[in-house]
Amino acid sequence: MRHPQIAAIIALNPKTELKVEGKTEMNQPDSRESTDISSRLIDLLVEYRIKLDAMEHVLKEINPLVHELYLGTIENLQAKKTAELKRILSAKLTLKLNKG
Image (tube, rainbow, N blue to C red):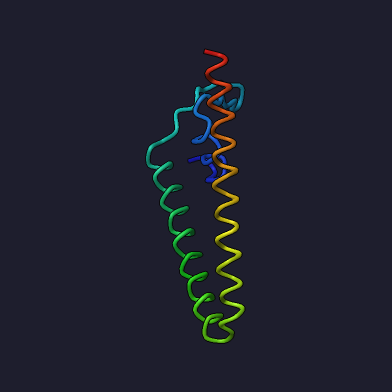
């Protein structure tokens, strides 16, 4: 059984070769380990989303003006994230098209 963090890195890069005690084995991520990692990641994301929603609700009740500022900030961050994602994806696509 591999260490969970190592398994996560290996799952992201399936062509990684591991050398263990002089042996070289081609990495073939165990589907169960990948599923476990994905499940834990989803659990953490849901947990933090619930916490953020609770804090937003408290903020709304305590100070509605600050809550409006918070919502505006979140919208701006989402727009920036979308623009950055589009920029990165278009750069990758351009690179692939130039290579191929």
